[in-house]
Image (cartoon, rainbow, N blue to C red; front, side):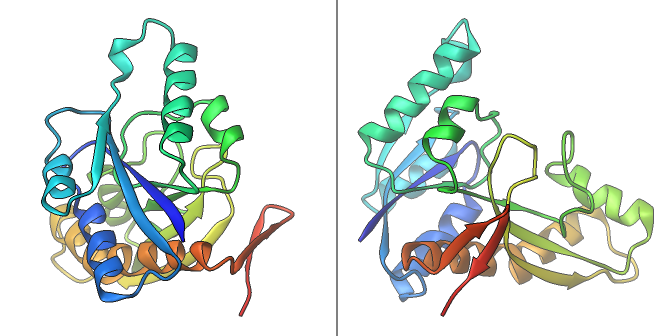
Length: 208
């Protein structure tokens, strides 16, 4: 059974999707053992408490140098015996030390079909605003491994979502969450925990 550590900063809707997926048996071979927040006021911490999940807080502003924060987060993840790290709305940048220590063991969910509307500056509502500004007919979500290129790691799963007439960024954000993010993130986590993903030449290959 793999230990899943979820990093959060806010409300924790993706965390809740993971908790629900674990309880319903969607996630096989893994268990959420800890929630780490960059924000001591994050509602995600209450979700963890409500489900008897261990939690911790680590704030970037408590470290004068980014390298010190990077080392501290790496040490905390190792202390929590993380086999898999999941970014579920974690708004602090990960550093080289964390990424190298957990190579191909950090999964992020991005609310667009990478390589569209991704990279630096594309997060939250900004992603959906950009999709609507461009007039694309399909958007969606991407579950991917994290490397040192922003949104550039191997893609695990993608799911398309239709854009409808009259959509606002807020309406589109909700539909992408419900129809894509909350489905493919638990699926990607389950595949990892069952050792069904191999990374070959920066491509995530899913086996049976």
